[in-house]
Image 1 (cartoon, rainbow, N blue to C red):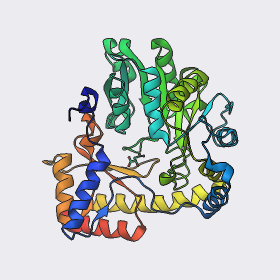
Image 2: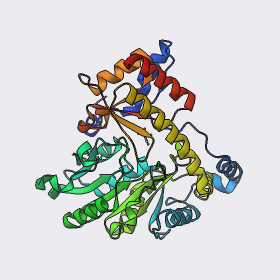
Image 3: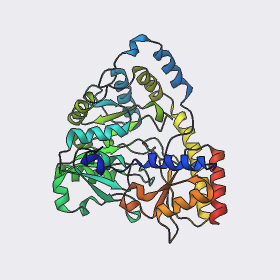
Image 4: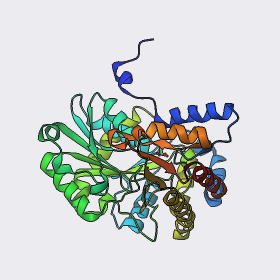
Length: 386
Ligand code: MLT
């Protein structure tokens, strides 16, 4: 069967490929510990599940949800943004319910990118931004995120012929995969750049709650002028251990939200109302929920950093998110090192090349496995590399 030219440009999904490798190793009888995908191992808090159970029993919730999402959920999102980031959002016009930030990033592209236009994407970066551009026959342009720039893109260094064709800029801080964060100065620069060049900004912010050492990551929308140029994607997946529930939100510029809504209402039929009611409960949980969660990730982070230091691996201490971005040893590529680690230890790590050209020479691990399994993974790695 001949697939479309578009599909031919889309590489296999990184984590689907990694899942295949895990399945093969398991078949060979290997006790695999996957530090691949960032999928929280801890359960969704019980109060959230209780609301789902109750609402799932209400026949009113069994019919199609509203395309833009329940107004009650969008209001809860706007209250959460006010409480957490001091950002004002009109729940009717500036908030849209998503089936996760991933699909939001794609719908933004469908709604605003034309064939031949450029989307600036971070490299290394979450693979979906590139796919989103390709799906609309636009051109993804990789902005290198370099160690020496603290993994922030040098916007003014992008060639002017590329900038001229650019319609969309994807940013993602706290950053997946590097764990870097963005400050107010950088975001001010982004807003100036967007205004100068008529570019729409997408801040993909699903790790907004995952700061370490008491650090509170910013929302792009906290910066004056942000709402005039862009939107932010966020999600309940990571802070509330709800990856499987598929619920998130796009917030910000009303025209952009409206465009995304048109694309979405013609493509999907929204999020199950019972899930949205449960998500309202999640957004009302006390701050102690996140604080406790981050204490666990912080311990895991420190265990990994200590182990990697012992074996001579150069890891970057993340300020947020639950990934450790690390240089592969000299003489290895990211793929050869990931293969070696899997073969010798049964531990799955993600090769940096999967995140774009600038990801070569690095690997990522995710801290989303139970403490004991992470300890075991570190012991195995230490034995092989020490
Ligand atoms: C990751 O591992 O990069 C993420 O879990 C993927 C995602 O958020 O879709």
